Image (cartoon, rainbow, N blue to C red):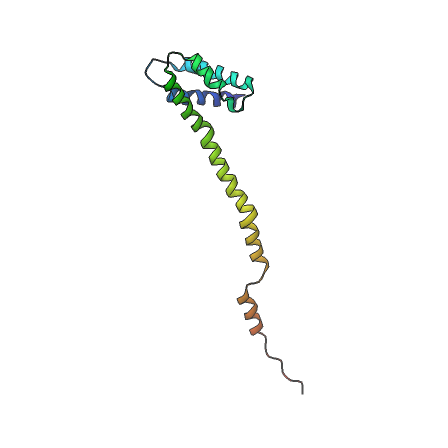
Length: 132
């Protein structure tokens, strides 16, 4: 619960920093509207609260211009959803590449002897002498 409260607080802070600064908007007002919009998004069961969160923010903050607030919400969604998603997809792709291609290739190289080693071991054996 504590981590969720901290996460919501930082999300509200990010939204406060991204919000247009033209009308005087204090952090508490934006935080209350942000948390209520988030709860409405959870209650709607829409993926990513898409549409519900945005509409609640527009209704809850009528003093901000719609275009400016929508631009802020778009930047917020890019920062909060798309960048972490792209980062995690990249990390998982690299890990899967490592596990399915690179690691088996390295293990197969360890199992078979190198050609130079096999030739050098044959040359080191002394020649057989004929039995007298």
